Every structure is written in C-alpha cells, then in structure tokens.
Figure 1 (tube, rainbow, N blue to C red):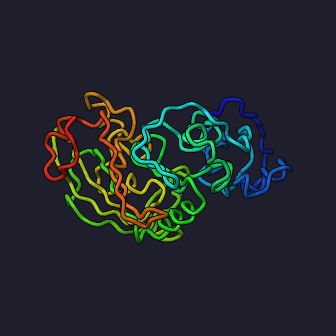
Figure 2: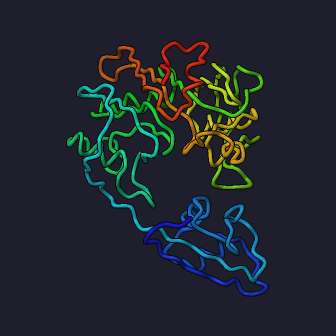
Length: 321
C-alpha cells in the first residue's frame, strides 16, 4: 500500500533464517510492538517479495525481500475544514446528514484531512471532545465509497444513547439499497453467519466458520433490468463490509465493488460504476434526548442506474432519477 510521505524500510532475510514474519520484524523494529507489526501487515503496509503476505505469522524460509511502509502519524487533534455537508436534520443533540461517496469518515493514514470529522468540527465548533478528540461525535461509520445517512452525536448524552443503540440494534433499523450483478438466488431471504478477517487475504472480510462475529442481513430484490438488480438490505448487525460480503456470497456482488466484486462484469456496464453502488438509504432510531422514534432518508444518488429505479417494484419512497 503506497502512502504519501511514508517511510519505506527494506530488509533482506538471511539464507536459512526461518521464523515467523511478525517475530522477525519485531527484532528489527525495536520501537514497534508485535501487535503494531501485525496491524501493519493486516493493513497492507508490509510486502514479502513484492506481494502482501497471507498473514502476519507466515513462516519465512530465508532469502525473502521485505518492505515495510511506516505511515506518518495521524494528528492527535483534527483541524476544522470548511467542507459542505448535506444536513438532513439537526438540533442540540443530533445531526443527521447524507454522506457522499468518496468522503472518508475520520482521519487515518493516507487521509489526514478532508474527512467528515474535519467538516463536522467546522460545522459544529463545540463538537471537539465528545466521544474522543480523534473521532468527535462519531458513533458509526460508512465505507469511503458508500453513500447515505449518517448520524452524529452533538452532546455527551447523545453519544451515550447512540452508542448503546448502535451496539444493541434493539431500537435501530438500518436499510440500504444496493445495485448488484444478476439476480440474487433466492431473490429474497435472510443471511445469518459469521464474518471475520479472511485467512487468504487479510485486507478482506469473509464468511468464516470460527473466529468471526454474527452477521445478519435481510434482503429482497426490488427490480431487475439489463443484468442488474436493485436490492433492499436491512441489516440487524453492523459488521465491516457486511452487505458487500453477503451479496457476493449469493453470486450477485455489488456493482463497482473493487474488493468483493467482478471487474469483468463492471467493464461491460455503460456507464461503468466509479464506486460500489451501495447507499445507506434509511436510518430509524430513537432520539437520544426525547426518545421519540425518528427516521432519516437520504435521496438515491444519481450514479444509481435510472432504469432500475424506474422499474422499481416495491419501494415507493425511492424516486426515479
């Protein structure tokens, strides 16, 4: 993984030096703990002979060339930036917004500014410190290339309430729209299994038999047109990449998904999707102060195929573009 301003360290493993990769690196990086080295491997900052290793504990044989990219430190306190926000609702406790695709939620290596957190600090000057200075107000997140509804806590009581709601999902309902290849088989249903880190590619999530977290997605196909389908997904859990993994497991990956998708199928689309076509369409929860039920809806973005939306069979609130 290339990161601007990263420090690149190169090593040559002596012939016959056989040990675990993470153990070998810790011996040569005395300022790094084993957990830190394992984190670098899992995040893709380590290569062995030019390729990402399958796992941090891989066995070295000797003669390998190892490169480690040390990402620059993330500033402890993000700076406010005047980045426009599409606000759906706001009061003293709660902010609901429509996050555009491409916007990173919080600063991280490779995205030190220009994030949603930077925008929030400009929009809400008193937000800093609520829930921590690095991710103020953030109670959940969307992938960089996923669009749609997000809520932000503007007070400590809102933070406490929303964290509890997102953890338990008892008073929470999250509904997404996805454009997928083909038609999911069956066309509606409930997927429940474990999702965890892939043992083949540590940068990906996968359905696993053990060492994973329970993941539940209820889905139904709303419309089908030109080898694409519009699918509504209501999730009861919030696992990393959950919908993307579950749709791919049905043989209908999300169009434009560069990690779990099918590049060849994407190339045959006109226009070709520039991101995974996944949209957090509706979020229902209890107001953190009044406890009244609330529902926020984000308009379907213009990169969703207009023909599919016009052919919508059952989601009346989705407007044709």
